[in-house]
Length: 493
Ligand SMILES: Nc1nc2c(c(=O)[nH]1)N[C@H]1C(S)=C(S)[C@@H](COP(=O)(O)O)O[C@H]1N2
Ligand SMILES: [Mo]
Image (cartoon, rainbow, N blue to C red; front, side, top):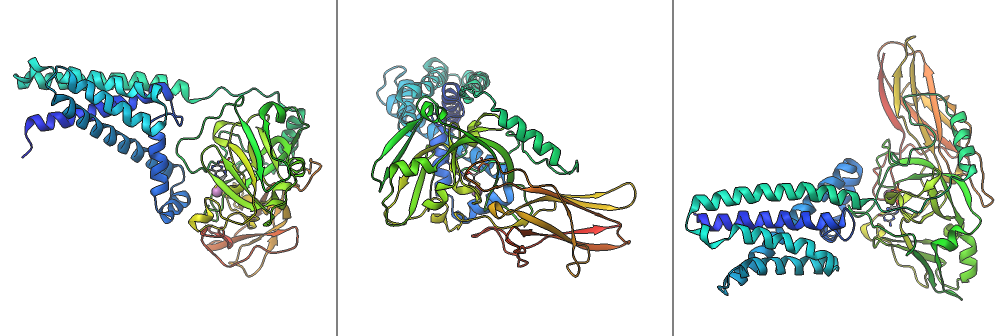
């Protein structure tokens, strides 16, 4: 059986752990300086690839939240253990309050090591000194009920501290973003998109709000990159390496255009696909300036969160460095201050928080390819069925979005008899090509309305891309090449 002294020490260590995590959050907010960030990076890295794949496909944001909650619990356990060890070591000296000092020092050291920020780590250590100091006052040790009362009082104090820390930290989470005057082009394109929409209110519009735009990244805590400190290094197998800063980039002639992103890990009919109006600078000039002489015709992009992806230099040359999204600076979760956007390719090579373009001599592989994915190539063609609406006049309308990267969508066909016959759906007009470089890379809306005979039927949709290729019928799960097959829904009338 556990002695009451022992279990009190456990409660004390846990309270100290909570206070330490709270203290760290108070000064760091939800940034990489928060002590949970390195732990969560470790958790994500240690999670087996199939579990990560399952989480992205089936759990989405929930999976991210679960991983984060687990990381918080793990951090708390580590800091509680440090409290335990530190206070035991201090207590052995017999010096009054040496246990509190020992616990605080241990927690400070662990936090400083994890985050690499010794000064900020004081915010974890100091609350631990308070918790251990208050709960281990020698005069209370003789009276167990007084000790218990003190523990309860401390728990209340830690809770209050946690709340204040939460409010303080929340304020630090959003970094100040460099303002960006909305390019007139954005307004024009947004109006164009509204005009081209089919007016089906049960499906998303043609331009996604930045706040609703899907988000996939490998860490639960996004990096915070200061635009003033941001630098892009172009190097590797090149004639001339150079760096570029944010002011340089903002001073160059910009382009504003539509681009749709889609994650290779999404289920066939899921919503990890969105479209926005992006502003940035074409990459081709940077590649030309560097003068690549690599043997593999390939590049590695690296980012502030440790993410990296390799793909052909040809693809990079069609891309651009984006700093604006829907007329404002990129939001932090979509890569502030600068991300790469590569037309027609799966989302994963559209590297956010971009810091490096390295021209390679030899092919290696990227973050997801190390985990078995093949997500560096062009997207698969898809027609999603995002709405089935029973209209007042008894007819049924199916609708959704279709996307085939730079091949474009030429047609969407619907079958209401399980695939025997097909009819053309109504398609929203293509969004304009606006940039000098290139290809249009945006989705379209489609809808199909008919009067169904009563009974149940299978309704299918498939897209035909700009090359005339029909979306393949064979159904495959997202891993490793992206989902394929025709979306099918059962409609009963
Ligand atoms: N630095 C960095 N860039 C990244 C990722 C990441 O985890 N880190 N995720 C990639 C993946 S898998 C996708 S699908 C897209 C998603 O972009 P979004 O979050 O802006 O929608 O970003 C890509 N760029
Ligand atoms: Mo992705």
